[in-house]
Image (cartoon, rainbow, N blue to C red; front, side, top):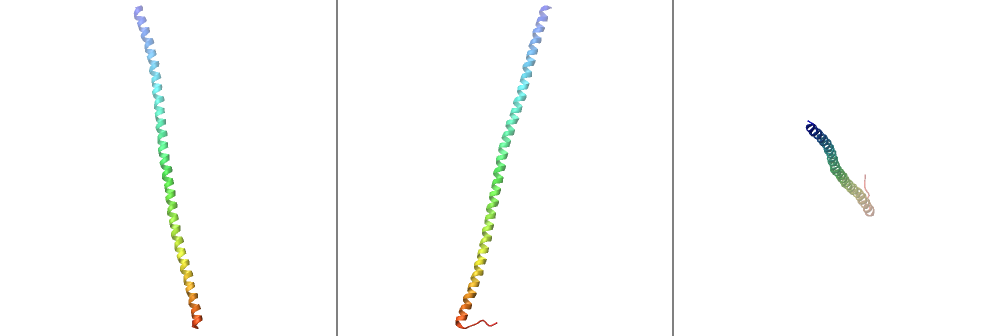
Length: 108
């Protein structure tokens, strides 16, 4: 009977040690799971943020390019209108000067 009691006590000690070991393994597994989720989250943040920033920057540069082109076209049109107006005025002035030299005054 003593022998059986000793064997049972040894088995109990062994089971308790195994339980503590398994408890430690569970804690380790939980810690590794948290670490894995954290690393994945950081990877997701790195990739998404970079792409978003790149996309926003590209969009801003594209908008600036488009507005520059529109401003250049508007400036060119205005320049042409000014040239036409000045050119027409100069032609009218030259015509008046020639009429005056020729003695052809404009009759109204």
